[in-house]
Length: 311
Image (cartoon, rainbow, N blue to C red; front, side, top):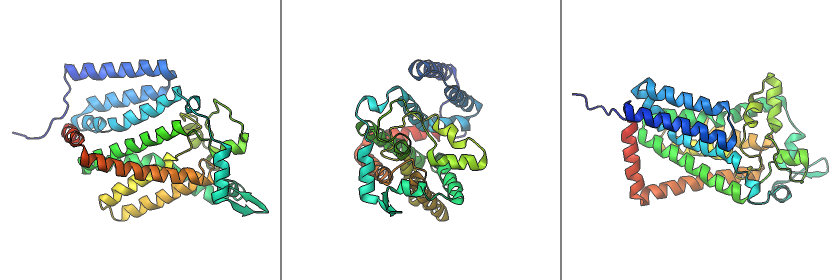
């Protein structure tokens, strides 16, 4: 007799639950932020993987952690952070110039302004490739851990979500404009400002594609530059890569990490201060998660139960 864990099986109860959740998600999303094809795509992918096989069902149930994060991020569109606290524009810009200003042609510039005046096509291409890694690398690493080590997969996934939650808290307590906003609009706050590719537009122009344009038109909030969660994600990946002793792969992770940090500033999406805040948020989230794992027995029990479901 096989001792394999069947996980969640397809039966009348699970069909009803998945169907109700799918319909409820689409209905609530349409009510809250309006219908978008992305939401229907997510529901279709989830349902296809849930019903396709036992392996795909366990896979999508494991990645539900990331789906929950994405839904929360998406729903932030309905609650702009500038409705709750004033947006910091000049204050952050002046602090950046004071701490990291670069003298160039007789002027004191922020690092963003310096690079804007010294762009190079090869840097545009390389930096764009680095910035494209901020989604595929964490998700690809998560997929690797899912098949290699379920426990580490859950730890990585929950750390990722916790770091994002910490970042979201800062977004609402300290709304901040990105450097490109100052370059285009000055220090005057303009609500409902749409997302902008900024320096990454040069990557799109070089390849005659709308890669970053399509990404940034879907942003949840322009005034959420502090902390740079783009800078947080590779730190989490590198930490768990080192923890899992991935050898040479960690060198790749380290290069991508530094590349994303540089691109965030080079492309005028973040100040150096934003990047440092993102790194700090990642370190705080990692430390906090490890502390919770050690101190909260209920969390460990829940993880063991969930690991059983997806194993």
